[in-house]
Image (cartoon, one colour):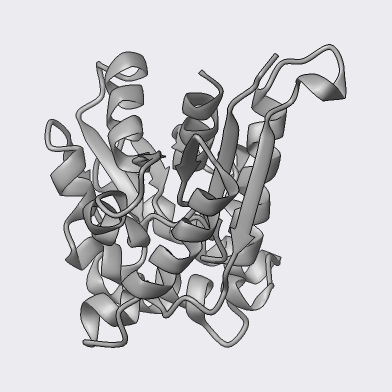
Amino acid sequence: MNEKVIGIIGGMGPEATANLFMKIIKATKVDKEQEHFRIIIDSNPKIPDRTKAILENGESPVNAILDTAKNLEKAGVDLACIPCITAHYFFDEIQSQVSYKIINALEELNLYLKNNYSNIKNIGVLATTGTIKANLFKKYLSDFNIIYPDEHTQSNKVMEAIYGEAGIKKGNIDKENLDLLVESSRELIDNGAELIIGGCTEITLVLKSHNISKPLIDPMDVVAQSIVK
Protein backbone atom coordinates (compact mmCIF):
# COMPACT_ATOMS: atom_id res chain seq x y z
CA MET A 1 0.00 0.00 0.00
CA ASN A 2 1.18 3.52 -0.80
CA GLU A 3 0.68 5.17 2.58
CA LYS A 4 2.57 8.41 2.10
CA VAL A 5 0.56 11.56 1.43
CA ILE A 6 1.66 13.49 -1.68
CA GLY A 7 1.16 17.22 -2.10
CA ILE A 8 1.05 19.28 -5.27
CA ILE A 9 1.93 22.97 -4.91
CA GLY A 10 -0.20 23.85 -7.88
CA GLY A 11 -1.95 26.48 -9.94
CA MET A 12 1.13 27.39 -12.00
CA GLY A 13 -0.83 26.81 -14.22
CA PRO A 14 -4.03 24.92 -13.36
CA GLU A 15 -4.00 22.61 -16.38
CA ALA A 16 -0.34 21.70 -15.83
CA THR A 17 -1.27 20.90 -12.22
CA ALA A 18 -4.08 18.59 -13.32
CA ASN A 19 -1.76 16.99 -15.85
CA LEU A 20 0.82 16.15 -13.17
CA PHE A 21 -1.91 14.69 -10.98
CA MET A 22 -2.85 12.33 -13.80
CA LYS A 23 0.81 11.45 -14.43
CA ILE A 24 1.22 10.36 -10.80
CA ILE A 25 -1.92 8.23 -11.03
CA LYS A 26 -0.73 6.58 -14.27
CA ALA A 27 2.75 5.97 -12.85
CA THR A 28 1.37 4.17 -9.78
CA LYS A 29 0.92 0.45 -10.33
CA VAL A 30 -2.04 -0.87 -8.35
CA ASP A 31 -4.49 -3.76 -8.27
CA LYS A 32 -7.28 -1.70 -6.73
CA GLU A 33 -8.01 1.98 -6.25
CA GLN A 34 -7.30 1.87 -2.50
CA GLU A 35 -3.63 1.26 -3.30
CA HIS A 36 -3.18 4.71 -4.87
CA PHE A 37 -1.46 7.51 -2.98
CA ARG A 38 -3.53 10.07 -1.20
CA ILE A 39 -2.79 13.28 -3.11
CA ILE A 40 -3.63 16.73 -1.78
CA ILE A 41 -3.61 19.55 -4.34
CA ASP A 42 -3.68 23.26 -3.64
CA SER A 43 -4.17 24.73 -7.10
CA ASN A 44 -3.53 28.42 -6.49
CA PRO A 45 -3.65 30.36 -9.77
CA LYS A 46 -3.41 33.62 -7.78
CA ILE A 47 0.36 33.11 -7.45
CA PRO A 48 2.05 36.02 -9.29
CA ASP A 49 3.69 35.27 -12.62
CA ARG A 50 7.17 33.83 -12.16
CA THR A 51 8.58 35.09 -15.45
CA LYS A 52 7.51 38.68 -14.73
CA ALA A 53 9.07 38.45 -11.27
CA ILE A 54 12.41 37.31 -12.72
CA LEU A 55 12.58 39.52 -15.81
CA GLU A 56 10.57 42.63 -15.01
CA ASN A 57 10.94 43.06 -11.26
CA GLY A 58 7.30 42.03 -10.95
CA GLU A 59 5.61 40.95 -7.74
CA SER A 60 7.45 38.09 -6.09
CA PRO A 61 5.54 34.80 -6.09
CA VAL A 62 7.36 33.52 -3.01
CA ASN A 63 4.81 34.48 -0.34
CA ALA A 64 1.92 33.04 -2.35
CA ILE A 65 3.83 29.83 -3.09
CA LEU A 66 4.70 29.55 0.59
CA ASP A 67 1.06 30.05 1.61
CA THR A 68 0.17 27.20 -0.72
CA ALA A 69 3.02 25.03 0.53
CA LYS A 70 2.05 25.73 4.16
CA ASN A 71 -1.53 24.63 3.44
CA LEU A 72 -0.13 21.27 2.37
CA GLU A 73 2.03 21.15 5.49
CA LYS A 74 -1.05 21.66 7.66
CA ALA A 75 -2.78 18.89 5.72
CA GLY A 76 0.02 16.49 6.63
CA VAL A 77 1.75 15.76 3.34
CA ASP A 78 4.96 13.71 3.44
CA LEU A 79 6.33 14.81 0.08
CA ALA A 80 5.40 17.45 -2.50
CA CYS A 81 6.23 18.75 -5.96
CA ILE A 82 5.87 21.97 -7.95
CA PRO A 83 4.46 21.60 -11.50
CA CYS A 84 6.16 24.77 -12.75
CA ILE A 85 9.77 24.80 -13.89
CA THR A 86 10.21 28.59 -13.65
CA ALA A 87 9.08 28.46 -10.01
CA HIS A 88 12.20 26.40 -9.28
CA TYR A 89 14.12 29.69 -9.38
CA PHE A 90 12.69 30.15 -5.88
CA PHE A 91 13.03 26.49 -4.86
CA ASP A 92 15.58 26.80 -2.05
CA GLU A 93 13.63 29.58 -0.36
CA ILE A 94 10.42 27.53 -0.46
CA GLN A 95 12.05 24.28 0.71
CA SER A 96 13.76 26.01 3.64
CA GLN A 97 10.42 27.07 5.11
CA VAL A 98 8.49 23.80 5.08
CA SER A 99 9.16 20.62 7.04
CA TYR A 100 8.48 18.10 4.26
CA LYS A 101 10.65 17.32 1.24
CA ILE A 102 9.82 18.97 -2.07
CA ILE A 103 10.96 17.08 -5.14
CA ASN A 104 13.26 19.29 -7.22
CA ALA A 105 12.20 18.60 -10.80
CA LEU A 106 15.50 19.79 -12.27
CA GLU A 107 17.64 17.66 -9.97
CA GLU A 108 15.52 14.64 -10.82
CA LEU A 109 15.74 15.46 -14.53
CA ASN A 110 19.54 15.64 -14.33
CA LEU A 111 19.69 12.18 -12.73
CA TYR A 112 17.23 10.79 -15.26
CA LEU A 113 19.24 12.06 -18.22
CA LYS A 114 22.51 10.73 -16.83
CA ASN A 115 20.96 7.32 -16.21
CA ASN A 116 19.08 7.03 -19.52
CA TYR A 117 20.86 9.28 -22.04
CA SER A 118 24.48 9.12 -20.97
CA ASN A 119 25.58 9.15 -24.62
CA ILE A 120 23.91 12.50 -25.31
CA LYS A 121 25.71 15.82 -24.88
CA ASN A 122 23.62 18.45 -26.69
CA ILE A 123 20.17 19.12 -25.23
CA GLY A 124 17.62 21.52 -26.67
CA VAL A 125 15.35 23.28 -24.20
CA LEU A 126 12.00 24.95 -24.82
CA ALA A 127 11.20 27.08 -21.77
CA THR A 128 9.96 30.46 -20.65
CA THR A 129 12.33 33.37 -21.06
CA GLY A 130 12.34 33.67 -17.26
CA THR A 131 13.70 30.15 -16.93
CA ILE A 132 16.32 30.83 -19.60
CA LYS A 133 17.48 34.13 -18.08
CA ALA A 134 17.64 32.50 -14.65
CA ASN A 135 20.02 29.85 -16.08
CA LEU A 136 18.07 27.10 -14.36
CA PHE A 137 18.86 24.38 -16.88
CA LYS A 138 22.52 25.34 -17.14
CA LYS A 139 22.71 25.31 -13.33
CA TYR A 140 21.18 21.88 -12.82
CA LEU A 141 22.24 20.17 -16.07
CA SER A 142 25.80 21.43 -15.94
CA ASP A 143 27.31 18.33 -17.60
CA PHE A 144 25.27 18.88 -20.76
CA ASN A 145 25.48 21.48 -23.50
CA ILE A 146 22.18 23.39 -23.36
CA ILE A 147 20.83 24.84 -26.61
CA TYR A 148 18.06 27.45 -26.57
CA PRO A 149 16.13 28.98 -29.49
CA ASP A 150 17.42 32.27 -30.88
CA GLU A 151 15.81 35.47 -29.56
CA HIS A 152 13.35 35.80 -32.45
CA THR A 153 12.09 32.23 -32.09
CA GLN A 154 11.97 32.52 -28.30
CA SER A 155 9.83 35.67 -28.41
CA ASN A 156 7.66 35.00 -31.44
CA LYS A 157 7.17 31.26 -31.21
CA VAL A 158 7.90 29.79 -27.77
CA MET A 159 6.60 32.64 -25.62
CA GLU A 160 3.79 33.30 -28.08
CA ALA A 161 2.67 29.68 -27.76
CA ILE A 162 2.72 29.91 -23.96
CA TYR A 163 1.59 33.48 -23.22
CA GLY A 164 0.12 34.79 -26.48
CA GLU A 165 -3.42 36.03 -27.07
CA ALA A 166 -4.33 32.48 -28.08
CA GLY A 167 -1.66 30.88 -25.91
CA ILE A 168 -1.64 27.69 -23.88
CA LYS A 169 -2.01 29.58 -20.58
CA LYS A 170 -5.36 30.79 -21.90
CA GLY A 171 -6.50 27.21 -22.44
CA ASN A 172 -5.66 26.88 -26.12
CA ILE A 173 -3.95 23.59 -26.92
CA ASP A 174 -4.67 23.80 -30.62
CA LYS A 175 -2.68 23.20 -33.81
CA GLU A 176 -1.49 26.80 -34.05
CA ASN A 177 0.45 26.54 -30.81
CA LEU A 178 1.64 23.06 -31.71
CA ASP A 179 3.03 24.38 -34.99
CA LEU A 180 4.94 27.13 -33.16
CA LEU A 181 6.52 24.60 -30.82
CA VAL A 182 7.32 22.11 -33.58
CA GLU A 183 9.07 24.86 -35.57
CA SER A 184 11.03 25.86 -32.45
CA SER A 185 12.03 22.24 -31.84
CA ARG A 186 13.23 21.86 -35.42
CA GLU A 187 15.45 24.90 -34.99
CA LEU A 188 17.03 23.33 -31.91
CA ILE A 189 17.52 20.02 -33.73
CA ASP A 190 19.06 21.81 -36.71
CA ASN A 191 21.47 23.44 -34.25
CA GLY A 192 22.60 20.07 -32.95
CA ALA A 193 20.14 19.13 -30.22
CA GLU A 194 20.01 15.36 -29.77
CA LEU A 195 17.08 15.53 -27.37
CA ILE A 196 14.41 18.13 -26.56
CA ILE A 197 13.20 19.04 -23.07
CA GLY A 198 9.76 20.55 -22.59
CA GLY A 199 11.10 23.01 -20.04
CA CYS A 200 7.77 24.63 -19.25
CA THR A 201 4.83 22.56 -18.03
CA GLU A 202 2.53 24.21 -20.58
CA ILE A 203 4.67 23.09 -23.51
CA THR A 204 4.08 19.37 -23.12
CA LEU A 205 0.34 19.91 -22.87
CA VAL A 206 0.64 20.50 -26.63
CA LEU A 207 3.95 19.13 -27.93
CA LYS A 208 4.21 15.32 -27.90
CA SER A 209 7.00 12.89 -28.74
CA HIS A 210 5.52 11.90 -32.10
CA ASN A 211 5.58 15.54 -33.26
CA ILE A 212 9.38 15.75 -33.49
CA SER A 213 12.26 13.65 -34.79
CA LYS A 214 14.28 13.51 -31.55
CA PRO A 215 13.31 12.27 -28.07
CA LEU A 216 11.09 14.67 -26.10
CA ILE A 217 11.42 14.62 -22.32
CA ASP A 218 8.73 16.04 -20.06
CA PRO A 219 10.27 16.81 -16.62
CA MET A 220 6.89 16.18 -15.03
CA ASP A 221 6.99 12.56 -16.24
CA VAL A 222 10.30 12.28 -14.40
CA VAL A 223 8.80 13.90 -11.28
CA ALA A 224 5.83 11.52 -11.31
CA GLN A 225 8.15 8.50 -11.54
CA SER A 226 10.36 9.88 -8.76
CA ILE A 227 7.38 10.39 -6.46
CA VAL A 228 6.16 6.86 -7.01
CA LYS A 229 9.66 5.47 -6.30
